[in-house]
Image 1: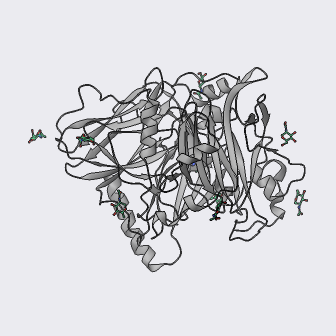
Image 2: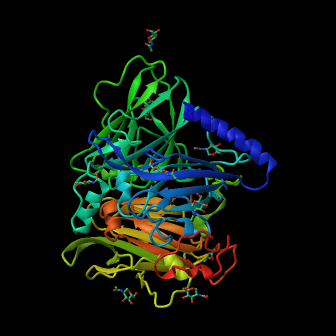
Image 3: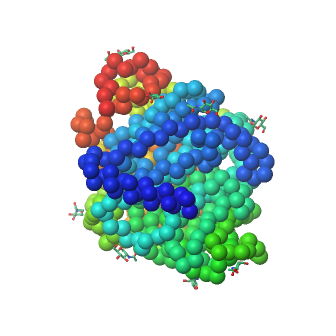
Amino acid sequence: MLLNKLIVVFLVSFLIVNSIVAENPYRFYEWNVTYGTISPLGVPQQGILINGQFPGPDIISVTNDNIIINVFNNLDDDFLISWHGVQNRRNSFQDGVWGTTCPIPPGKNFTYRLQMKDQIGSFYYFPSTAFHKAAGGFGSIRIFSGPFVTVPLPAYSGDFIALIGDWYKRNHTNLKAILDRGHKLPFPDGILINGRGPNGASYTVDQGQTYRLRISNVGLENSLNFRVEGHNMTLVEVEGTHTMQETYTSLDVHVGQSYSVLITADQAPKDYYIVVSSRFTSKVLTTTGVLHYSTSNSTVSGPIPSGPTIEVGWSLHQARSIRTNLTANGPRPNPQGAYHYGMINTTRTIRLATSAGQVNGEQRYAVNSVSFVPTDDTPLKLADYFKIGGFYPGNIHDVPIGGRIHLNTSVLQTDYRTFIEIVFENKESIVQSWHIAGYAFWVVGMDGGHWTSASRDQYNLRDAVSRSTTQVYPRSWTAIYIALDNVGIWNIRSEFWARRYLGQQLYMRVYTTSTSLQDEYLIPNNALLCGKVVGFHNKTILN
Ligand SMILES: *[C@@H]1O[C@H](CO)[C@@H](O)[C@H](O)[C@H]1NC(C)=O
Ligand SMILES: *[C@@H]1O[C@H](CO)[C@@H](O)[C@H](O)[C@H]1NC(C)=O
Ligand SMILES: *[C@@H]1O[C@H](CO)[C@@H](O)[C@H](O)[C@H]1NC(C)=O
Ligand SMILES: *[C@@H]1O[C@H](CO)[C@@H](O)[C@H](O)[C@H]1NC(C)=O
Ligand SMILES: *[C@@H]1O[C@H](CO)[C@@H](O)[C@H](O)[C@H]1NC(C)=O
Ligand SMILES: *[C@@H]1O[C@H](CO)[C@@H](O)[C@H](O)[C@H]1NC(C)=O
Ligand SMILES: *[C@@H]1O[C@H](CO)[C@@H](O)[C@H](O)[C@H]1NC(C)=O
Ligand SMILES: *[C@@H]1O[C@H](CO)[C@@H](O)[C@H](O)[C@H]1NC(C)=O
Ligand SMILES: *[C@@H]1O[C@H](CO)[C@@H](O)[C@H](O)[C@H]1NC(C)=O
């Protein structure tokens, strides 16, 4: 409740400040990243803390805010933070992944300068280097609508976070070592809600009030089902898009995805289970949290409400029911349906098919037969920016080429201001989840079987949801439309973290010959330089 009051205070002070000054507000953070002992599943293990916290601090912002975060790396390892779903428009230098940003060395710091430009919604941040994500270092990001933009939401009394994810009792160095030896990871040990094990996460509500709950799957591989005993959820927002407000008894949240729901405390005042369980696994992992009515005298008891487990059709049906509210405002006082994405002709189709296999006797994962490896210690973006000669990353084919899996640094070359179609093809029996940094895209279709051009007949060209992470069901495809309006080099990755680590990712270079700052910013003046660009501060570095 304190947090909710803080948010209200924050929003009120924002309104006052914003009515006086014209420039978008700045919000400053200083983060100290350290190791610390955590024991979310009852076993002490090494975790990554931010300012002593696991999960890390919340970022609470308003559309167009400038968020300045000075990150001090006190680990014994290079470190980077990536801002999942934050688009960093014109500024891929801030994205915080291997291909865009030099890592922060141990004992050093780097100040990220983000702008929540033209965005609203629920997102999160996470550590992108090594296998740090398995140790924590993640936290929530909220972007509220600006003061003159009406939102299609009833007033709600509190704004809660549920960072859910599968979890290992092993530390991240141990997990990384397994992958580095060319093996697969074992099955996770449990599921956490906000870094807590069974009944550790509790949400206090007043009877009769309605609450917003922002759910993000920050885990490593498992799709999760989220439900609240005795309460329905009204879906209101998906990764920055206001949705048609449908009611669900439970919601599938695939790795990397975020949803906002409204929950009304309209039941008898007692404690209710919040349940999160793994989907599509033969052994079902389950954890619980608590929805606590403030006047409740009893603790949770009785059987834990069951949910879907291996049913794929159920999940596909639910995914198709998630649609954009075309008349609701987005980040601007402008209906989301004003951009008629379905009436724009795509100029290119890229089919990305995933596969798994061995290279030199070690486990690898590939996209169009290429298993991604970082070439050296020069981020692609900086090599590109400083026009390093002799730097030729591998271009990835637009269609699956078959053949043996091979290693390369895959880059998808694309042109600024084109409108393209990407089809993610999954021939395996696992659920995939794909994220594109710097962008939101329309999820126009998904279905079982092979994608063909005839599959376009079933596309939703009217009110598909625009988001940054989409699932691809087993032996299925998912098609997206994307407007390439953000110059830079952007990570396209599987959110299945072991698969990303062992090659299932690539970078998309969105290129223009323009050097206008309207199209892309200069490299920030505090940028860390590494690899082949060490000492290149002699080139123009402004900002
Ligand atoms: C970060 O935390 C460590 C351990 O608590 C401490 O030694 C260090 O001084 C802190 N650094 C900053 C910049 O706060
Ligand atoms: C990580 O786990 C391994 C064993 O699984 C252990 O040997 C090592 O000390 C642990 N590292 C830390 C920093 O806790
Ligand atoms: C590191 O932190 C100091 C302030 O403590 C700041 O002046 C400096 O710009 C930061 N370095 C980077 C690279 O952001
Ligand atoms: C869509 O948004 C409009 C405008 O804010 C709102 O009046 C309407 O109730 C919303 N419809 C649904 C189904 O969410
Ligand atoms: C939840 O929704 C279902 C289906 O719409 C309905 O049957 C049920 O009564 C609702 N439950 C509550 C607690 O509102
Ligand atoms: C909880 O206990 C208090 C005091 O014993 C009682 O007044 C109240 O009615 C109880 N509330 C419920 C929901 O049972
Ligand atoms: C899209 O392509 C169709 C068929 O080639 C053409 O008739 C139509 O004018 C094009 N639409 C736009 C907006 O370019
Ligand atoms: C990567 O692919 C490029 C062609 O796109 C090729 O020239 C290069 O040799 C490949 N690198 C490796 C390590 O195979
Ligand atoms: C900048 O410095 C690097 C390394 O010192 C050097 O190789 C490069 O030629 C210099 N570039 C310019 C434009 O002076």
